[in-house]
Length: 204
Image (cartoon, rainbow, N blue to C red; front, side):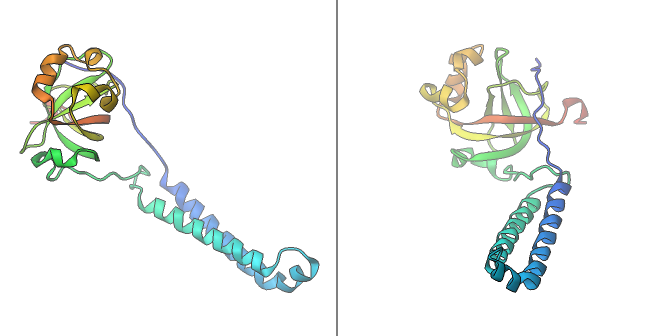
């Protein structure tokens, strides 16, 4: 059984941040020169004083630091880097309840759903399986695909399912009762992004 839908990606050129840093550094330098050459003239003419220029330099320097911090958090392709939480995750999924995670694993089983969302069980090679629920359809998925999932870990409760996952269980599952019978009180991922990193035909 396959699930079909679109891909979610994010981009952000790193070189834009570097260019911004260069411009800010240049502006700080210009401000410093202006402060040296126009200090007395500004004070006499009632214009920009040395104190004004110093405050301007301080603000630009602070902005340069912020841009630098943003650049450090970007990958080489300009996309914001994400932390892989896979190590240890499948050994104790309950300890992650309430946290946002990004984990990788193999789809052990696709859960029958309607066309308004998707669900599957994810295996990490050891430890326990964890249910993944997505209120929108990801790209085409098949059992044994290796995927990277980003979302929030929640404890499955029938009375809070719609709030936790953004969709009513009866609207999503072909058999909601059977799903809750297996998953209620367990940890599950309310996913906002699913990426296929290796398709089943490429596993050999």
